[in-house]
Amino acid sequence: MQYLAQKYGITPEQIAVNQGAIRERGAAVGFAFGPRSRVWNTFDAHRLLCWAGQAGRQRELKHALLQAYHGDGRNPSDPEVLLELVGAVGLDLQRAREILAGDAYAAEVREREQFWQRAGIHSVPSVVVNQRHLIQGGQPPEVFEQALRQIAAEAAA
Image (cartoon, rainbow, N blue to C red; front, side, top):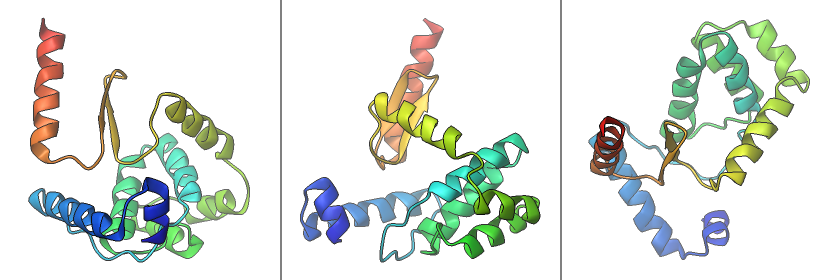
């Protein structure tokens, strides 16, 4: 709560309301947000996602990480958690250990982080469609539907 209050300049009551809305939106699309007592650093998870992308398994690892972090409240900076998830999606555990022990993919992750920050993205979730349209924040499904319909109509015109 303290971290979120400082980061966003809002009260604990506002945070509780926001978290309740996010839980409702998740439930509406079949995702149960679990308890989370803190915010963890996800840099190593992003390094593994970069590697998983090259192996054609990024989506699977991303889903596993999202479930572990947001659904189960697990620490995505814990190497044991990361290795468990890597193994669960069928990626090479030894290569994952090597990545975590070194700085592989660090430059790529930092470059992408800086790219998106320069593009104006400073919070998650942020969804970019066709490299032009930004849908930012935990929006209800109707907002995504409306935005995607508008983008499709503009593309068809």
